Image (cartoon, rainbow, N blue to C red; front, side, top):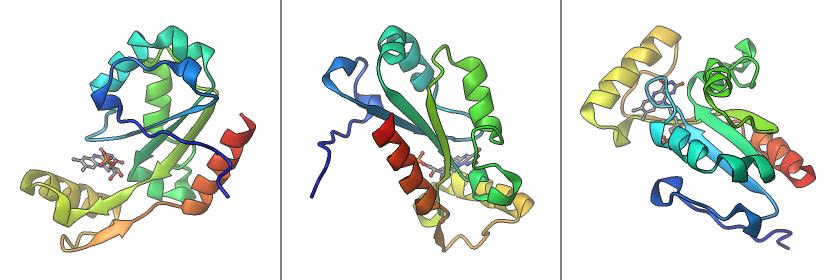
Length: 150
Ligand SMILES: Cc1cc2nc3c(=O)[nH]c(=O)nc-3n(C[C@H](O)[C@H](O)[C@H](O)COP(=O)(O)O)c2cc1C
């Protein structure tokens, strides 16, 4: 049985959200070449007051977070999350960092080459015929449980 009604929206496709329509909001964003999308920071600035007033959790996805033994999957240990918290005027109450998927066959030539280089340097998968999901779904479930209590 579904406990919640959920609406999924792509932030690229809208500028303003009426946060008062929702009990809880969860925003997820991924890292590409070391950064979050600039448009995401623009979205934060445009919606700052609403974000501050609403119940919003934030999660970040990247491949560095696969290194759980180094704490890269935690808000404190993730350089990307720490940079976000410095740059963003909005400081979410609930944060999470998850490892994403490595999908070589879906990347453009340049991205495939660059990501393979990064993987070689950081001891990850270098076989470009492969797709690897590094996501720790147990951690995602725990995050989902804390959203319920938010
Ligand atoms: C072009 C590209 C650049 C990426 N750059 C980084 C990076 O700098 N650091 C990192 O940890 N992960 C990086 N990743 C991994 C992504 O953050 C991860 O695969 C995520 O799941 C991608 O989600 P998205 O396709 O929704 O953006 C990169 C992925 C792509 C496709």
